Amino acid sequence: MTPLYQNNPIKIYNSLSGEKEILKPINEGHIGMYVCGPTVYSNVHLGNVRTFMSFDVVFRYLKHLGYKVRFVRNITDAGHLENDADQGEDRIAKKARLEQIEPMEVVQRYTVDFHNILNKFNFLPPSIEPTATGHIIEQIEIIKSILEKGLAYVVNGSVYFDVLEYNKTKKYGILSKRNVEDLIHNTRELDGQSDKKNPQDFALWKKAEPQHIMRWPSPWSDGFPGWHLECTAMSTKYLGEQFDIHGGGMDLKFPHHECEIAQAEACNGHAPVNYWMHANMLIMNGKKMAKSTGNYILPNEIFTGDNKNITKSFSASVARFFMLQAHYRSILDFTNSGLLASEKGFNRLMEAVNSLKDIKTDQNSTINIKSWQQKCYEAMNDDFNTPILIAHLFDAVKFINQLKETTESISNEDLNILQQTMHIFINDVLGLENVSEASNDSDKLSGAVELLIRLRQEARANKDFALSDKIRDELAAAGIQLQDGKDGTTFSVN
Image 1 (cartoon, helix red, strand yellow):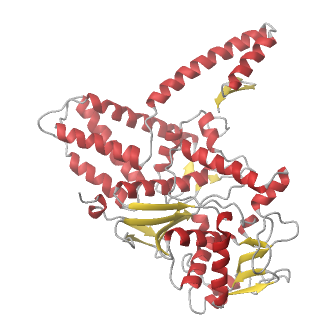
Image 2 (cartoon, one colour):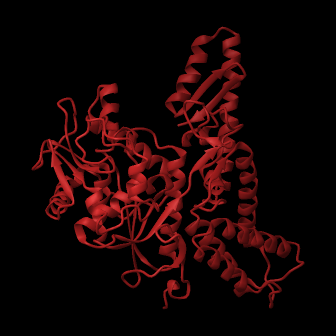
Image 3 (cartoon, helix red, strand yellow):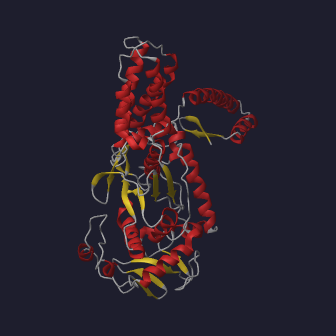
């Protein structure tokens, strides 16, 4: 059987060239894809979820087309300093110091949170999920190689990449379209406190200060690897010196991905990646998300409705559907009105899918189902254009309603194609779950809990505080938290 990918050439917008290019894998039928994962020092935020969701869909579609995909997404559990700089405190170590716990307790807590959130959004797990601390040896070996080639230098136990030396034969800034000359012009002179020769140089290895908790032995000092180096070591180990796709958020293009290219070129003598993909940012109510202004929402708050920026709770599938209605390269504005509209659209889509089993067939079709099916593939083949795909899925909703009203007819063969294609693109590719049955269960649960809330209120009014507390505590033991507020009592399910 001919794999689907042979008849479905994919165009990918390559950040390196600034153009859409036909995907031509290094090895026929195989794709190597690396995506920069989270630094696990806090709860994963919604902007992260959107980026990872974009590449979850890429992974899903490539697998659907029959590619054998090795998808590597790392966990950064050391080396990521504050403000993405070469100075300051390790983000994980700082969290550990503030909470007076071990750094690996911080890592474990937020790695578990990361996985729990992605599971709720129905992500497929990557093929490999390596950690930075698990690849210290590989990082040290890369540093040795770069030093041997004269493209790095050692100062006081730290090792820095020599950007100006590298730029004599290669092009630093090739991804972000920046010139080293401009970078020099726009950078303040070093104040004498840095070990770097030039402000543009970046750390491959940092000597640990006495108070630095996370440290490993190396030929240069007890210290820790540079943040940029981690991804080069892990991608090279599992995907080879050259692989197909590297993805991440737009904010990583410079300097993180730029440094990855320079390190790999310096070490191996050729470009590491053929197609660079970058997902755009998520904003909220037209403004940047920020905890300092209150203009932010955590993923779990979407499911509970416990956030001032939304008027109710939403299922993970509705939130996922909302995000996929924007192309991954466009800025997405997260709003309550947008979620409400997406919920209506999602319910219409699921209602149509659920009614397919009741459609009566005819000998002939008055609707060209194969042409519609081809449009769905064309949308995804054009740089994974999920909003166009979703528009085609709503064309199918119109077809289904016309078939229910018997103003159009469909053959048994075409009905099977329609059912299979809807399942492929809604469930397998977009990763949406039909939550109608779960919603019915949720409605029943809500009714039962609301009854208990009323009984608790009556108990409190009668000064029967023992019964009131018993209802609250029994619900808490079952994973249902009650929140008393000025507008009454609400609940959330943990």
